[in-house]
Structure formats: C-alpha cells, structure tokens
Length: 278
Image 1 (cartoon, rainbow, N blue to C red):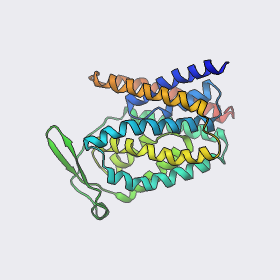
Image 2: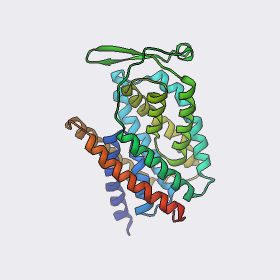
Image 3: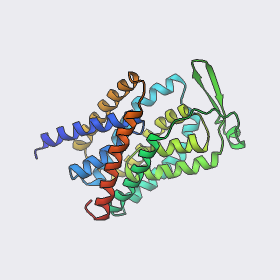
Image 4: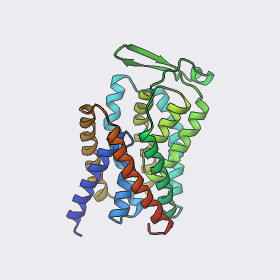
C-alpha cells in the first residue's frame, strides 16, 4: 500500500470517527484507535499518539465557543484538571511499560462503557446544595438559559476529584479524552447540571490529552505523517456532526448507531487483545 493511499484511508476513517464522536459527545478517539490498529495494523502506541493530537485539536476548537457563552465552569475545570493531568502522566508512562494486548483489552472494556453511557438518558438536574470544600474553593457557578441565569451548587468535591484522577489515567493509557468518565464525575458524583458537565469536560480533555502527548512525543510515538490526516479528518467529521445535530430533532437513533459500532469495535479489540494479535 502506497503512502498516498494509506493517508487517504486514514483521512476518510478519521472523518467518520470524528462524525460519530461529535454526534455522541464522546470524541473521535474511541473510534479512531480501533480503526488504526484493527483495520490498518498500526502499532497501538502510534495510534494513541495520533489520537491524543486529534483530541487536543477538537477540544481547542469546540471548548472556546462554550467558554464564550459562559456555560463552562472554568474554575471547576482548572481545579479538576490537577487530578486529570497527574493521572494522564501516570497513565501515559504506564502505557509504555505494559503489553499492547493488555491495553487493547482495557480499551475494549472502556469502549463498552462509553457505548452504554451514550445511550443513557440525559437528565438536567439543578442542585442548589453544595459542600464545605465547594464553598472554600469557590466552585459553585451559574450558566445562562433562555429563562435567565441559573445558579447551581457543587457536591462531593473529594469523590469527583478521585474520579477525575482515574479518568486521567485512562486518558493517558488509551489516548482518549475520557469524556464519559469526566461526565460521570461531574454529573453523577458532583451533581452539577449536565450541560455544564459536558462543556466543562470538553474544556478539560484537551489539557489532559496535552499532558499525555508530552510523554508520547518524548518516546517518539507521535508520527506527523499519521497524525496529520487523523487531526484533519476528525476535525472535519466533528464539524459535520455539529451541523447534523443542529438540524436533527432527535439524536437517539444516532446514539444507537454509535453504540452498535463501538460495541463491535470493543469486541474486536478484546478478542485480538486476548489472542495477542495486537
């Protein structure tokens, strides 16, 4: 296979990965890594390196809009980023010292979890209560709605911080944004509104990925020839996905499509990992 043909295939595959990731809000990394490793036989470390670069690019582009609208809780994001950055560095270093087949199996499990999360109904709850640490750290916030500015409190700061540490390890280990785990931490544990959870998660995943990318860059696992079409394809796919969402009244059927594809890829990753084919 020539370099030109490989580049075109990676570009097209990354486009659909970015499209699916954008439609579900989970990012393209969960799709692009199985595509590169299973279909094209790319070493999983290089696939993770390229995915991390795409996560940084997509997060930087989309997060700016949410920050400008005042939905993102920047103070909370920066506080939790301490945990995710430490976790990401640990995960990236860990990934370089364990077998790639083990990484593939873990990736498959996380893919199944992401598929389940994409189908879970999203409930917008407003919690007026907060805890002592949220007050001391001034983590409570507001966000604009059509009915006016809504105030919300942040709960279980310690539990959310620990969950973010785990999300960072998974991000560094697998080269994904861990958006699903971050939303679980903020929406499920810290009880902040879902809209704020998703936008703050989007703000954070780029920083988390950047921390992991430094480790992969130092070890030579970020190949510009592979990363360039991945970044371009994922960005274009994410842009298309955002336009589809604007004109779609219900995205539930899209989430089912995403869940089926991701589950299929997860089974393939686990199977190949258990049989040491990756």
